[in-house]
Length: 357
Ligand code: ADP
Ligand code: MG
Image 1 (cartoon, rainbow, N blue to C red):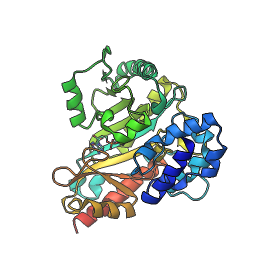
Image 2: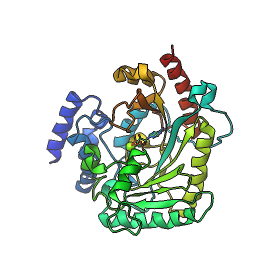
Image 3: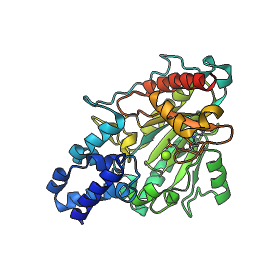
Image 4: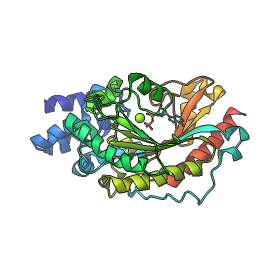
C-alpha cells in the first residue's frame, strides 16, 4: 500500500503541480514513519490523492498532527501561505486602532454584505476528519450547553438550530434550506468530494447545527470543516463594528467551551492547513459586473492584491446576479486579525477603482 502511495504521489506531482501535498511530499521522511504513523499520514493525505486537483491536498485529523508531522507539513504550509522566515502567529484585535469604513471609498459601498469568520477546534476531541458519530453528537451537546448561556445573555439571545436527526433542537428540512439560501447555514457537506474522502463530512448530518443570535449577526457553525466556525455577519460598511462583534462573541464563547487547540508556531489549529493562524476569513459580497464577466482574469487581478475571489454561494460556486462575488484576503497565517481587516479594506478600494475605471 505504501509503495503504491509513493508512486501515485509522484504521478500527481507531475500531472497536478498545484497539489501542495504532492509537491512537498518527502519520500525519505515517509519511509522513516513506523506503520502506525504511516497509517495516520495516509488518512491525512487520502483526499489529496483521490482528488488530484486539490490545492492543499492534506487535512489534519488530530489537534497534535501539526506537531507530530511538522517536518512533512511545514513546507506545504509555507508554500501556501508564502512564508519564508520564522512563523510565529501574532494576534491583534484592537478594532479601534484604524477606521475601515467602506463608505469612505464610495457611498455605494455603505451597504454591502459583510462576513468575518474564525475557525476553532477544541483540544479534547479529534478533528472532524477522525471523529466518530458519537463524538460528533457529544461535541454538539457540549456546544449546546455553551449556547444556552449565550441565549440567556441579552447581548446575544437567539437560538440553536440542529440538523441532527432526533435532536431536541432539530429544524425542518425547509428551515434548513431557507437558512442555507440566506447564507447563514452551511451547505450539505456530503456533496463535497474533498471533505468526503477526508472523512470530514462523515455521519452527515449528525452532530451538525448552528447557533444564531437574536439580531442574526453573530453565528456559530457546529460540525462543519472545523468543530466551530464563529462569525459575524452584517449589512453596512463599517468593518470595525463587524470585527468588534465577532471579537466580543468569541471572547464570551471561549469562556464557555473547553480550551481551543493551538500551536506555538501556527496559532489556531484547523483541519485544513490553509486556515491556520488567525483562522480568519473576512469577506464582502460585492457586485463587480465588469470584472466578474471574466472570473479567471478577476481572480488573477485580485491575487495581486492579496485577495481571493469566490462565487456568491461560497467556495466552488460561480458569480451571482449582477456579477456578485465573494472577496476575501487570502493570507491567514502570519498576519494579525487587524491586518486582515486592513487588507480587505485596501484591496476593496483597489478592486472598486478597477471596476469603475
Ligand atoms: P467559509 O469557508 O469561509 O466558511 P464558504 O465559502 O464556505 O465560507 O461560504 C459559506 C457561506 O457564507 C456561503 O453561503 C457564502 O455565500 C456565505 N458568505 C460568505 N461571505 C459572505 C458575505 N460577505 N455576505 C454574505 N454571505 C457570505
Ligand atoms: Mg468553507
